[in-house]
Length: 340
Image (cartoon, rainbow, N blue to C red):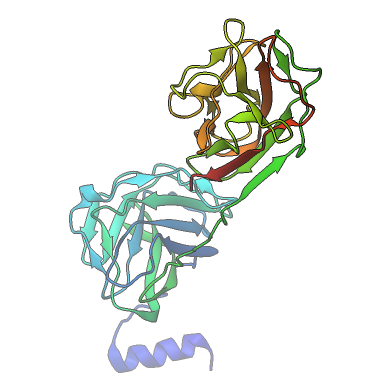
């Protein structure tokens, strides 16, 4: 039947009438709301993103949050930022602090949007939104509006709220400590005499990730160079008092410890402070510290290191009447520990 006939029949039955057409709002090309927290009953901020479909002049954007969420009714609490937006997003033009809150709906200002562009903004999470109970398919709507307000584009989104949205990561860095001697024998470079003579020297290399660094110690078997064949000794000089002895003005047997390498690859600095190696910090080629039969600190580091090096050099000076023998000897025990 032709439309004219239908109109005539309806007119006859009911009197004059109007044909009314209804236009549905277009859906946004893309919509998502990313909350900063998905944990149940948790205060959160978030990010709103949308890609418009319809050519029109936007003046506001309304975000409707899921039923069960607590929405602050104070529009001034809904401040926004536009930094750290998702990749590919454009700052939402004209966005600013919300102008209206009604129940679950929060309305923000906007200016004109370009169809096909993904726009985003962040809303603060201090006093704005609190998630609801745990569950899936928590739905809301994002709507762009023209003056009036009149809906331009509108699309739904869904969220999932969980009991806990965080992963606690744990790790262990194992304690590391390396100690190495360059050799286990050390001979004087020439026969002992009434002038100071030194050994070739041996090095100690230390590597550790101990937070407070390391300490190294030494002890002497005899506190002297001793000859078994004639039962004579060349005693160590001086006393342990944090002050080296200078053999330029005395005789005896001493140990000099030099910081050859402060690696600089960690957090530590090597030093020979009082009580931590000052005794053995000889200042020239004739000085060194008093040896003891108990462990004495020779140096320390304040933090981690990729390879600190100490050089241990023994020195001796004798009187003209020191008894002759070829078997004068001493044994030094060198140890260290990391301060974890």
